[in-house]
Amino acid sequence: MGDYYEAQDEFMKDTLKELGSFTVIKNRNNLNYIVLGLAVLIGVGSIYYTNIIADQLKKRERNQIELFAKTLETIANDNSEYNENVMLLFEEIVVANETIPVIVTYKDGNPKIHKNVKIPQGLTSEEVNNFLKEEIENMRSQYTPIVIANKNNEGEVFNYEYIFYKDSFLLTQLQYYPYVQLSVIAVFFILSYLSFSYSRAAEQNRVWVGLAKETAHQLGTPLSSLMAWLEYMKSDPELENRDITRELDKDIKKLELITNRFSSIGSVPVLQEENIFDVIRSSINYLQTRISSKVKINLHQESEEVKAKINKPLFDWVVENICKNAVDAMSGVGVIDIYVQCSPEGNIIIDISDSGKGIPKNLIAQIFQPGFTTKRRGWGLGLTLVKRIIENYHRGKIFIKSSEVNTGTTFRIMLNG
Ligand SMILES: Nc1ncnc2c1ncn2[C@@H]1O[C@H](COP(=O)(O)OP(=O)(O)OP(=O)(O)O)[C@@H](O)[C@H]1O
Ligand SMILES: [Mg+2]
Image (tube, rainbow, N blue to C red):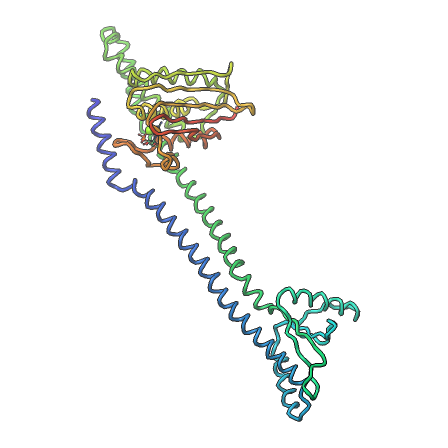
């Protein structure tokens, strides 16, 4: 009988592996990196490109101001009739500049004329003057002013004027634009990712619960019929004390346990206050007879009584899965130490240590993922189930406290006290 089940199990695992469900995780990881790489490339690219455009615009604005300065200088120093034409040109240039804020000052720094500087409404002339002076300081911190030299007829410089200016609003916007744009896109992607992973988790939940419910339901019918048969056998004095009846009884109990677990996973499990120490001890007693006799499981209790609200069938499943992994990791020879203690905050801490082969650092992040296994005949579902039971059903935590290759691994479970 056993051989038959093993062969069937093997067949199912091979089929699943062929279906490629195990490579999906690796591909998904690679895809994540590719998407991340692309996003960084697009971000850097767009900032770089806008910077180039901003630089060009900056150069153009500088040229415009210089032209403005030259025109002012020419007007100031040229008294010929040609001046009229220059005046016209000046008008054109000054009027054409609708964007670059400019202030022309006298030698002593007092503002003479200004253009495109937004002055708040309702200021007195003194306040306007102060405002312009502040603005001049602001402009000075951005660009050194351009000097206009006023010359007399002999060409001697007799006065100076300065042109202060700063980046146009357009240019300022252009410099910030990629960052604003990228932040908006990033927020959008984070929100979409969150909603996507939320719906994926919800879908996974439905699959887990649905499958578990269906399994419990399917097992239920033949199980009750088997139980009836067993009762019948027990009532027959000839069969009552035969090995077959005893073995059948054991198998039915095991089937009942499995059905119980699946139906707990498939419904909102009832949590009851239990003595954790007692629960683990009974779990160990059950396991000890089913694993290699060269594996010793020790239970250490650090506190007097440790109670927590748990669902016993599911919690048993957790202990069983972790211990079975430990036995596999030790190749059937070694020690498993289980420590139960109360943290100062009142949480219950359960550490399960083995003296097995350990988990390489680069694999630690993956061991709770469904389908991850390093075993030839593994499903890679044991720890996924354990994590679900602890985190979703008990609102606790499970993680690897420590693991060293060739030395051993310690899993830590934390439950709310
Ligand atoms: N105590 C441990 N020591 C070393 N490696 C471990 C230990 N526990 C888990 N692992 C690693 O984590 C992997 C995933 O474990 P998990 O229980 O989820 O799946 P599995 O044991 O491979 O298959 P199954 O679904 O049959 O339990 C294992 O294949 C093993 O590589
Ligand atoms: Mg396992």
